[in-house]
Image (cartoon, rainbow, N blue to C red; front, top):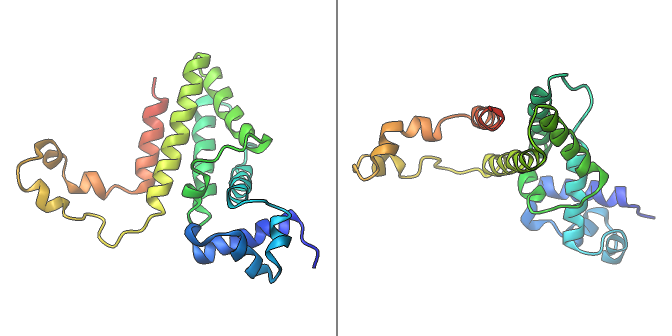
Amino acid sequence: MRLNLDDVITAAFATLEDEGLERLSLRAVARRLDVHLNSVSWQVKTKQALIDTMADHIIGSVRTDDLPADPTERVRLVANRYRAAMLQHRDGGRLVAGTFTGTGKTLRVAEVIIGGLLEAGYSGADAARLCWSIVYLTLGLTQEEQTPTENPHGNLPELLGTGVYPALALVGVETLLDDSFDARFDYGISRLLDR
């Protein structure tokens, strides 16, 4: 079997879905393909190179076509598509976080976001910083959403009942923790884009 990079990446995503990011390795991909490790490492040299390439594929799947004319709505839609692309893959947020491949795929998404912000009247520096803020909100929230927990409230209700955290008690557990990830994301993006 003669492997190409697409074969390796397809197997890597299947491994990610089945085993998660912790167990993703060149060796696991080779096992899935039933080939020697050297065949995989010929295509990608290290685990980090594999992760970078996978992140590039995830970001590359973000559609930047069929966008609204309003620049702020354009940014909002691309941010939602960016989040959706990561959510399509187990541990997608963690996989993309901390990578920067600087390829045309990654820069294409940043171009649309920054271009929309510039068109909306932000200065160059503000557009760049706001783009980073949108990316960080999207990455962070996606990672949290993809990290399941058996007890999402932990012991927060008891702690809030102690009187030590009056501001948090005033807001309440429901507002702090029961808000959906979609609602949190929509609110965060709206606040970031609100001038």
